[in-house]
Length: 312
Image (cartoon, rainbow, N blue to C red; front, side, top):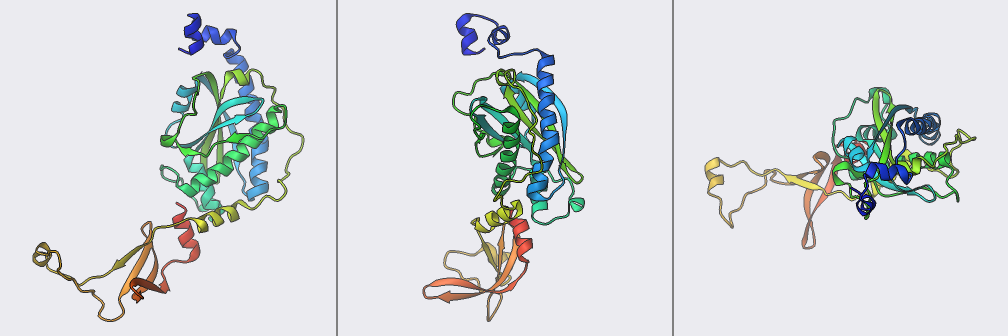
């Protein structure tokens, strides 16, 4: 029960109807379908102009209910962000299936759409969350162009989080809302994105289709370049492995503080360097002043292979 309904001792649904926060199913379905048309017509153009990728978008329908219930019903394998648009809605929620973000990342790093299979369900990595930020920015810009909120303000979108890490904004009300859902796919991989919007904002909205199409923002950097730069700037923890002499289990079980195990290599000691379980370089062990160090002697993986591995 909301604070207002408790104050007036009134059924929350009835109070919401009287105060413009709950509409009839027919009106809500019509508004959600209009948003579906907006995204179906314009979001593919945005992706095509800025990434060169053919993205398929379709409207699948809407659900109504309390905001928290609608968000929960979207599942766990999603990335989610709190958002607002001044003069339209102070709080709504954007979500997108993790499988689409993972697939988009692989495409931007050079994989062929026809060669990409459905990814396994998993939370997004930090770099994939950076890409989700860019995706939500485009979803938010299409929304802003269609609702024509006075003042021409841009949507404010918080950093996306995996569903399990979502933090509700302070003072979030459990309003009656609607979730309109869209499919979004590249190649054979089809995901879903959704917007969960309080009905109070929806019922005041006149959805209009923008006049201009196929126009990429001036100065927009290629998404692939941006992601590549982000990967290269990311700090990665390296692990070094040195092969030691083999010992019997009896000897190992009796090792004590101060015992010494010799290296397997008798001259230059080979060190294998890896990150996130991926072998990257072969090195040799050395010393610089008082510090031990390694010197790269060979590459195990190419630069592209390293970037593809670390981005996941």
